[in-house]
Length: 296
Image (tube, rainbow, N blue to C red; front, side, top):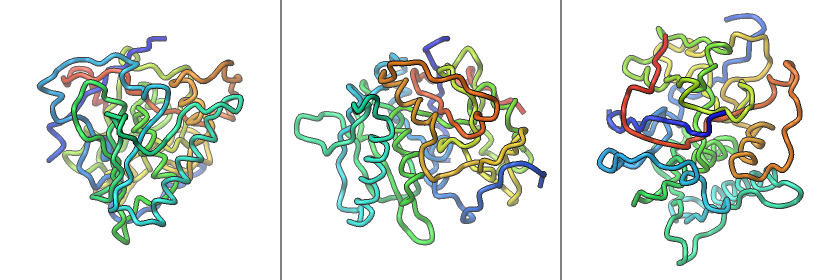
């Protein structure tokens, strides 16, 4: 297993029915996770990455000791602040190992040079990973502008997992064994959001593909015509793009990545694979299109 993952910072894009398959999750005409104009809709990278041009070490993407300081701005309503804090507490409790916390979200102090700023804004988005060597304001943007809202537990946890260093599920190198990308239904010019990475580029941490991951796109992501852009190849009952909350392997991924698992994950039967999840972990970034595989 390789432990280095190479992903592209696509800063140039910042501004610019089958039986026995999962139900395609219906959303508003525009998914708020896709409204921010970032890479893959909601993943934010440093704008100065191109000038630095350096690859970061895996540990640089992990928050030290699994502690994530945050600043909750006044743009977040009090009831939404309570919802965000509840989503954080759930993640902390779910990822505990032997009653010990694996990750911790806490208010920042003057001693925290690096922290995340939680604010209302356009879309749902988050910086990916710790980003130790970059000077920037790391943000978690959660929009509330009815009928569009990011104030849903699963969406909040999705964005917090980006903060922790995780990518989207459907970017895995083995994704074509599990889903079919319907390129003809994707909005012209947004095909890069469905980039697939090679076995040499990523490490899936020994965990299986999961339709039910909170980090998976929904079936109509970036649709141009209301038709599915992702169709499962397996007979499963999970809903693509569920935003209820972390699944069992979402939890195991965090535990493994942050070094909290003290015992191997139990063997998984083919049947159980449909109810667990995995995300891609950001371990290295660098600029260059050569490592992206836009397989159609």
